[in-house]
Length: 90
Image (cartoon, rainbow, N blue to C red; front, side, top):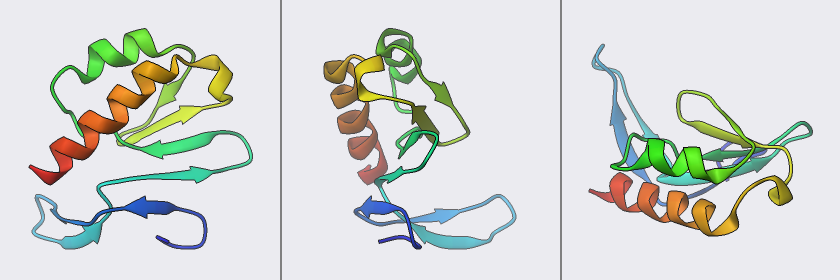
């Protein structure tokens, strides 16, 4: 658990341009009231193309927001999660 409502898998060290560092998950999700929030956007190769094929969603800096799983192509979502996890480990 990462905080009270985020389930995260793996761990990586992030370093900001300011030099600040913190431990963060490789991928994660949080079942929030308005959206299912997935922490999977890290700029992996092909990310934009997959997001275009995904279906109805919105994004934040590192988050993918989905209202209902029925709104998206689950095979594309699987590819996004898999590629994101691989990129986070690299």
